[in-house]
Length: 158
Image 1: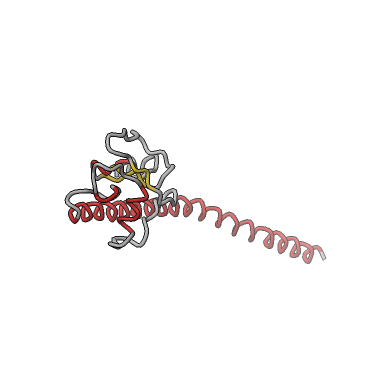
Image 2 (image 1 turned 90 degrees about the vertical axis):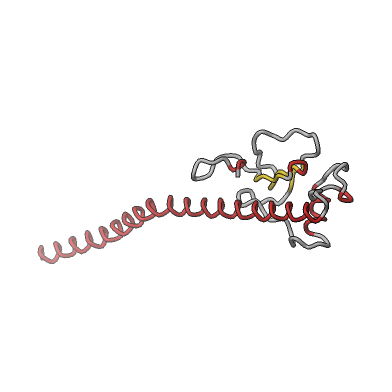
């Protein structure tokens, strides 16, 4: 009887130890995998942001070339008129159909545009309040997201 009770005790120990080992292995794998997944997710957002910026920059250049050097955003394609997000959207996504819609900022999921008018000061840093910050006078568009990427480059400097 003692041998039988010892077998039961050993079986109970093994039945308790197996799940503990499995949980410990899963925790170890997760401790290794989660940082890698976050890094890949971060890099994917960075690549999407760079790609969207390149698309917007190309459209600004093409639009300007087709409208006597006037970038999108100015009413009636007159650079003396105050530019606005409304006119930027109408000119880029409207009748000429450069885009169906303004792409989102990959980090804050916004596609809003802060248009900095002629002579207005541009913020020295990103706020994250908009998807993009656009300076028609300089024909420059930036990603509105604070911080730095996985390589240490400020998103604002993309």
